Image 1 (cartoon, rainbow, N blue to C red):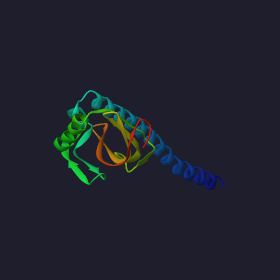
Image 2 (spheres, helix red, strand yellow; image 1 turned 45 degrees about the horizontal axis):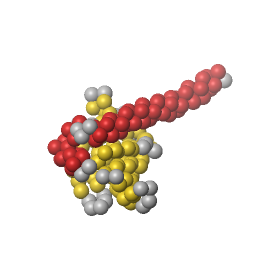
Image 3 (cartoon, helix red, strand yellow; image 1 turned 120 degrees about the vertical axis):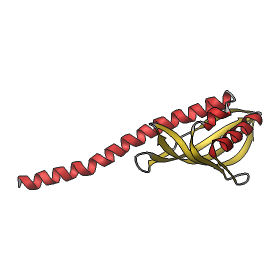
Image 4 (tube, rainbow, N blue to C red; image 1 turned 90 degrees about the horizontal axis):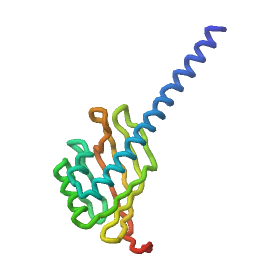
Length: 156
């Protein structure tokens, strides 16, 4: 009887530990992702396109779904994209995290809404992306974004 009880307890602990570990990993990634998004926003405000590109892995890519499909791959292309956003007059970029899911020890998927202000007009949309841990640091491996309505003065 004691052997059976021990086996049941060991099984329960064995099944619970991976779930607990995954929850801790998800919390760690969520915290790192929020810091990454805050850093991106700060870099846009500082007009630092190179700093924005540095938040991505060397083989990262960005996919924009609207207003037309565009794919930017690698640091140079991503830096040029951020420079275009900055040159267009972007003054504020904010993103929220609504969902994070681990995809292994060093990869996570996340999604949420974003907002960017360009010359007084707010562009809202949604993003999803894969994050990859490189050298202990979480970076973007890929990001997809689709924009919604362009709003001005609180009306869309």
